[in-house]
Each structure stands twice: as C-alpha cells, then as structure tokens.
Image (cartoon, rainbow over all chains, first blue to last red; front, top):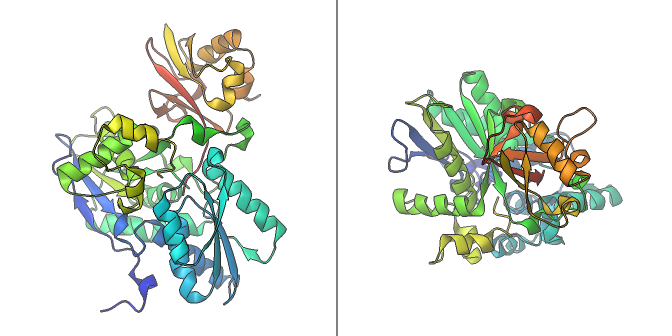
Length: 314
Length: 91
C-alpha cells in the first residue's frame, strides 16, 4: 500500500547484522536511520514535534517556526513544514557541513548562523534570544520537548524490539538525548537487564570555546537514569570505525555512526556485557551529507580526523 | 601515582594556558584537591558546594563518564587519563 505522502514514510528502517565487525561471542546490529525520507533519524523527531504542536493548536498555515539545530533536525523539519506552508528558520552553528546548508536552502529555509566556537550551545542560545524577542515564532525546541523522546519510545524502540526481542544492549549517540531517553526507557520496561550506553562526541578545542562553564548545556529531555554508561569518542576513533564499517560491512554511514559503533565494540566485554549478547547500535544518518568534509577521501585517518574535529559531526 | 589531566580551553586560565597537566590522587576527589594546590581555582570550577561535580562539567576517566563509575569518589590508578569537558549538545 502506498504512503499517502512523504510524512507517512517515516520509520520502518532496516535493522541489519554486522557479521564481520561483531567481536567473538557478540552480535552487533545496526539500525539504519539514514533510510528515513530526509536521510536521518530526525525525521521521526520532526514528525512528532510538528504533530504535537498542531494538536496543541500552536500551528496554522503561515505560521513561522524557529529551531536551533546542527542540521539534521532542521532538514527533517523543513520537509514537513514546506508542504504545510509553515515558514521555517533554523539557527545553525557555522561549523556544520555544506551539504546541510544546501539542503536547508533547497527547502526554502532561512538560515541564521551562530558562532562556530559556541557549537550547538550557541545555536540554542541565539534561537532562545530570537524567540524571546518575537512571541509569534513557534519554537519546537527538540532539546526540551517531550515529543522528541516520545518519538523514539513509540517508534524506534518498538521497531527494534519487534525485530530483535532478545536484544541485550543499546548504543546510541548523545545529541539531544532523545534517542537514548526514549528508546532506553522503552527497552528498560521491556527488560530491565538491557544495558543502554551513550556515545558522546569529543570535538577539537574550537568547538568548546565557551567563555565560562555556566554556558554549558544539558538538554532537559535527557534522562541519565536510563543510561548504564557514557563514553566519549574522538574524531579519530569515530572516523576509523565509520570507514571500517564501509570496508567490512558495505555500509556507508555518517561519522556519528562510527562513534556509536566504537562504543559498542568497547562494551562487548564479559566484564560489562554477558557473552552471547545482541547489541543494537543506532546509525543516525548515512554518509552523503559529510562528503564535503573529506571524511571519506583517501588519506591518513588521523590527518583527516584532525580537520573533521572542528566540524560538528553529530 | 601520576594522572594525566586534559583541561578544556575554558579552564586553562587556571593552568597558565596548559591543555594537559599532571596530578596525583587515588580518587578523583583527591586528584581535584591536588590539582587545586598546583592550579588555584580548579576545584571551585569543577566541584560545587555539595561536593559533587558541577552540572555543566563532564569528567571522563579513560573515556568513561565518572558519573557512571564512582562519581567524585571514582578510584584512579597510575597512568590513567582524566579528561574534563564542558557539557555541549548536538542535534
């Protein structure tokens, strides 16, 4: 049966085994969220954010929507807002990939740039200032909106549990905390023994250019009580795993997939995860939006990662 | 009992601009005290009045967030690397 329109084609993504990369005694699986309509897991979130706002009567044709994003959420929101006649503005850190900016432009999105040195925190700060100055703007605010984790609680996690009811661990990247909080909560309800691990991106110094510690930001939607561990991954490890994934399994993914995968490989250790465990890794997006960063170009991984470490890849 | 400690840009005003310093301690709490002796102001930057890590600071022991290990009482061993990062989001 055909989908009525593109918004009905969100989710139902493949869960695929990684037989070549699974460590002895463990089975790794990758949830390919790049198979969503705009190519990322954020299609699920955007659909839930907009539906929740419409139900609450906060949107009507001609409404203006504002969202801080490092890119994927903006692209996903754009694909929903454009046909509905909502005018979208995205606040995007300067150091996001060219592809993300091009795609937003294609959808007619107004882009406001926030300083590279403030990372995503700067985009959040600037968007909040803009929203405070203009009460007619509607800001879904993925970092604080319960519809974000609910998308994963109601769609991502049930899909995985349907395909793999005896899953033993979940690994996902930490951005807004939506995937980990929503899917993690569902998994713990299914079986409290399931372990949930966060892969936290570690960037180069320039991305942490805060003036003081109080400019740090912990997304309100993140519920760390569902986490069993949080492991940071630098650009070298993330990129190496991303490139290994292409070579070993034929899967072309974005750099944050490699970050989560490298955490999965680390926790496949009898001291923290029973042998025989099945481990699901969430791949937030495919690799196409990172081609311009040189992430997949020939050359030394450490050299390429050094350049990449100043770009927001999650 | 040397521990390598990586300092984020925002806290290097306490370390004369050094990105990497060395300290000692058998727990993270002891390390923080030792670091504060060498680099005044670091303890207040990392730990609140309640003795716990500040909300907007993440501390990693060999890449693992100490909040999921033993928090401020996490045991340390010679040769460990402790990394301090400000809390940032993505998405």
